[in-house]
Amino acid sequence: MLLASGCAHESSGSARRQSPLVREINVESDYGQIYIYDAETEAWGDTDTEENNPLSRALDDASNSRRFVGYDDGLVDVLTPSQYNWKAPMRIEVSDGPPPLDVAGWDHVVEVPLPVPSGRLAFEASGGGTPIETKVPPNTYRARLSGRGYVAGAGEIEGHERYRLQLWPAQEAPPRLIKYWAGYDVMRP
Image: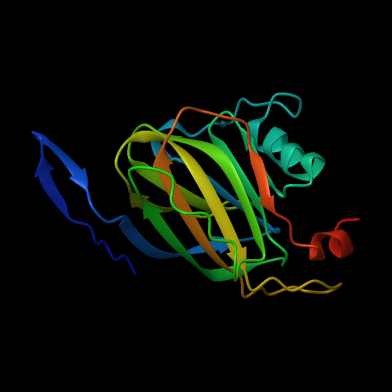
């Protein structure tokens, strides 16, 4: 399902969005991960080695930083609390500037850079499969990923997580943990 809303009006000769562009899609996670990237500039390929692989580096960044959202060379790797979730709701909000910080009701919140020069934003479950794409205005974004519905515990196979991805134009800056979900301490001590 794809919903889009937004309005524009002319102001001093330039168009500006007055409300965020919103997309509502379902994404898939598998092997406890969701990859997010620009569909035309996929950051990995068949010639990557184990030592030179953006997927491995983003995974290492997510784990070693304890943000559980990693970043490497245009690739965002979201580590999910469950093994898989084939219909994880993802709300994408694109605005002209940073949205107000809203962490109430969210379990985990992280900001990362996310370049989307083609305007084709892809979400892919780890382990392969067909990426799920949506369009956003081409840009280099700051991305604030918020997740909720997390459940901690051994044997949590099927998840019921929900996500929100807030995007706004910004220069690349280091990832930042805003709110930490303590369940990761149980699952990945």
